[in-house]
Amino acid sequence: MLVQKLAERLQPIFNHLHENPEISWNEVETTKYIKSFLKSENLKPKTFENMTGLYVDIGKGIPRVGFRTDMDALWQEVDGKFQANHSCGHDGHMTVALGVVLLLKDLAPTLPGAVRIIFQPAEEKAQGAKAMVEQGVVDSLQFLYGAHVRPLVELKDGTFAPALHHGAAKLFSGKIQGVEAHGARPEEGKNAIEIASAIIDGLKRIWISPTEQASIKMTQLHAGGTATNIIPANATFSIDARAQTNATMEVLTSGFEKVITAVSMMYDVSIPYQVDAHVAAAQVDDTAKMILKEAIIDVIGEENCAQEVITPGGEDFHFYTFLKPQLKTTMLGIGCGVTPGLHHPNMVFNQDRLSTSSVIITRALVLTLEYLEKGEKL
Image (cartoon, rainbow, N blue to C red; front, side):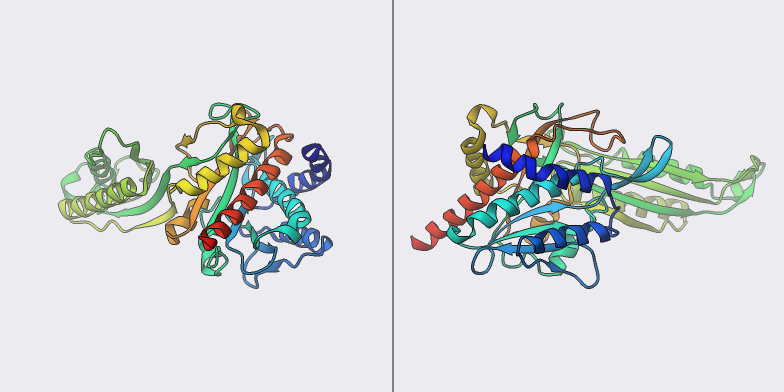
């Protein structure tokens, strides 16, 4: 009854968010909409002067437990037209968060503490979590939960997982600055394509334990002009690195830096590079996972509580723990039949699972407050 009643309240919210997507750092109208909704519920949301996003506290005292949702959409081609598009489920995540707000509001008089609900921008840019940390939004928190819709290949529709083990990702870009020469006199030049080949060959020699999931490879290379009889001097390249753990990502990063240094010395050329994006791997806390698992079982039964999900995808949420190691985190995996898949321009999922997710998260937040209260009394 609670789930169905909440679903009726949440459906128009989801519809609005789905029909009005905004890309990273441009979630202006989304922020206004959520702020207006929270104020209509007699809550006091906090916004920022220099960025989108907001948060709201429910309950008495300093919040030590929180739930975070992402807000931004992707920019992609949909039916032949490029546009903002909620193909990663952030419209659903925000709807879940607002459902949690409604449930917590009713429970506020009996809550043994305060909860902070965080609406974070720029997840797709892997920058929003860092910005929230810099704003001090999680400074008082001890536990932080997140949630993400999952594709059918990972979770059966109607089941929920107490942890998502996302991998780490790092994207590099660089430029090879060689020497141009006539195609008949290659010895007089420094061929950017040959130098790029040496980089590719070097990346293959970054050895990782076979028990670890990892890869590093060149994904873009642009060199030369329209003439085919000229040794190209310059080239730009991109490197994509993936690892299941942050420690393995450090090994890949160190290996990449050594390869660039070695190739630069071998050819006596400059190869400047930069890190374009970095997503931290999950660092799931056992206590947070245990509490979330209990909440799942309480709400929908043990038969619908799935195993933890190990996924190669990345998620900005994990930067909270990466930057604040004392923070205990885990993410709810929402089995809602995502098809054809995340980031597909025509992605759809079972919206009936959103209200259930709100109830599960709310239960986890209450259990966490009780856990902290019990610890204080011991």
